[in-house]
View (tube, rainbow, N blue to C red):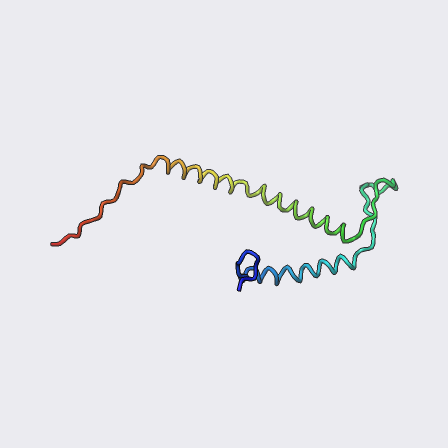
Length: 117
């Protein structure tokens, strides 16, 4: 009996995803509900009291934006440091294509005749 709309059955990977991300979603929801009070976010690094440089935002929003920015910064750093591996894979694919193009097509194989001494 399929449980998905496209007729597939759930796999162990699907079960593990729900096992991990289900409780994590509940924790994030509870965190958001309990941290709704507003906190001042000051954009002036020298701490002057200019009213246009301060925003009042909910704490959970500040935390999630900082978390998202950290994930983006980490992803960018990883992507930049792994550039040499992507270049190596791209060069290997190009060399494979060049070698396939240079190799002649194999001749039609003729069935072997059994040898009888």
